[in-house]
Length: 481
Length: 94
Image (cartoon, rainbow over all chains, first blue to last red):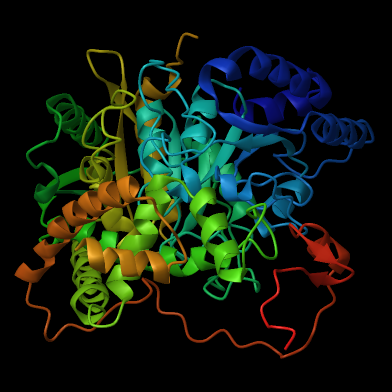
């Protein structure tokens, strides 16, 4: 079920929210043991919210298109009274005393929260294998990873274990799993969606966004998520458009740029071919496609692996076993309490990133690493801004390969990091980018393409994405489970 | 490198057994080697970017706003005493 489709059915009173919510829980009970998408289920509160929605509707009132729609949130979104673990042992029993802005916005819109979704611990990972609560499986092939870090969200949407979901994207964590699971994912412009109520990973890069079954649903979700939040100091105080308004605008004459640096060694030939076919499709729809250059592309991943761990090492200093989260049972003294709680609470990938971050920020290394990376960030941003003066959007593959096998890359951090090679540059530049289905490999695994737009250019991305979606059938395919 | 990383581990308030320390050192060296690629670029005249979007300081009134349920904040602590967080003794009785 999609948001729009279900919303119309609810409006016509063909179905009730309680009925559809119950049917989702039945499906979750059946399929979640296979997929491991959900970490927490909110059955009681969900049915209560659904009942309230139905009662409201019977009186002729509604809170909008999301009213009565069952959704799920990545377990990085703070939800008051609902366990929020960030897939880490250190937050295993954390029950937030406050509500994050995004969770509150969905409540206000009448959405029904089914539960919280699995992810890589603290959103650090590209395969969902770094969750402290077990990996998520790709619904298209249970031996494969769903992508990460929002792997639970992508798998749950693809397997229809929720109508729509949210994710967060620091280096590709919405777009890469969306591509690998055949769904739509948007990383909005930095500052467009609040960070208040997101457990922080790398604050200058973190951005929340929707993960849905099609572009229309992503627009509907953005109508709820986007907007200024005084609780987030980097939130943009800019009016929010109705994101569904631009969908049907024609794309005739629009220019798309394909960066030559994105067709590197190591890109899967089937992915390359799918993007070439998508570009041709755009030409038949009246768009102009040209080759562009983003010369500093190859420096994005190394710059990111300085900036993101540096910010993470500072953000994760708050987990000290004192005020909330896990505490070691018998500490000898305060230092022992810190060390044992943190060592036991963090998994190996989080530990690696904390150490990397501490190293690049330490005395004597700051200029060589952190400052250098920030300067490279300027060059990468400049590449994009120059290119986007010539074209309306940039078309690239979302990930270099389709989903890989579970266990294939866990021992080699670099191999894992390179699966975000096409998404990381976008976060460094703070631009919006949309991933949408554009093909399948011979092995039956989904392939996704990425559309990158100008700052606050989400509407244009939806317009360009919607035109492609209308002309193709990829997004309609569902995994057989 | 291992010696330097042992210091980082201490600074980050972590404590790793020998075997894990070796594994971590190997992985860190591998990533740092890759990061070295940035040295190819001359960035002498380039301004650093700390945030992708230019945001001017977000000033607000320095006014207290009441929190709905402060008791909850103490209740979720691993150990608390009345309205305080409890930790092991940090000063001697003397």
